[in-house]
Length: 326
Ligand SMILES: Nc1nc2c(ncn2[C@@H]2O[C@H](COP(=O)(O)OP(=O)(O)OP(=O)(O)O)[C@@H](O)[C@H]2O)c(=O)[nH]1
Ligand SMILES: [Zn+2]
Image (cartoon, rainbow, N blue to C red; front, side, top):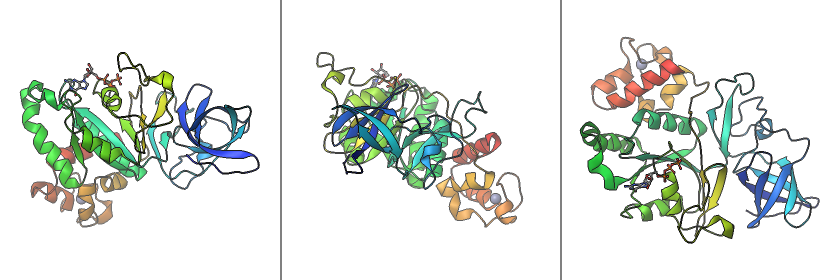
């Protein structure tokens, strides 16, 4: 959120994406913008990750853009700056012609906060594995945030027993795990510090408590007064649009409303294994070398590591399942 003169144009960051308009933060001011005619939106022609031309895909929240001001709080987006990172999903599977590749959900993010509740609903570990593979693929770090830890005794008996070892597995692999509850306040300081100064994309299924969590974080400058409802404390943001929420003390979070589907795209089997950090040490050490897909091949170093307890059997099963789906 900075500005710089460029032939009467300013640089800004997209903080909100509406149907045909954008909000752009320029020097802490929100400017309502539309796209210049030349910038076509939602017509991805190729996968856009780091270094590739982002203008080929939909411009989205987190993108840095050049804006020509018209009036005091309106402008036209005239150019898109190169992306540092893009986090996507396979969009609209029923329309492969329209969206042949991944759709970038958010641009330039530093980390993903993957949110799951310990209960109501019980955690969906395979979905978490899928999120983490997508993070590895995008080259973005991931933080696992468990919510509603006050409800731990309400988990079904089987999942109570499995939760702690599964979270320990994730920690061992290197993913930070935060345990939170907005009811007791547990973990909220830790969450604040991990979000501070970074742009984080918050993902998780509806009902896991994302909104409650974000509303429990102190907002920073740049939010409009109208977004806060001082009576109920609710409604700081709606969950109908992708929107960036600045945090007090720096950093911002992007909420992902209505994220129902979450596919993986174009990840070849050999690349998929490399998206499981705990498997990386064993890749290339199988009898069949890099051609091993670590399923039923003899002399597979990955499967041996599973047998030896160095790779979690649950994560390995998740790998096999994703490989089948890839
Ligand atoms: N016990 C308990 N309940 C919580 C906690 N956080 C959220 N909830 C409840 O979980 C339900 C869902 O919370 P939301 O914050 O609306 O969940 P969400 O993930 O934002 O859901 P969407 O808005 O549909 O995306 C609500 O009934 C909350 O009151 C918590 O820490 N403890
Ligand atoms: Zn193998």
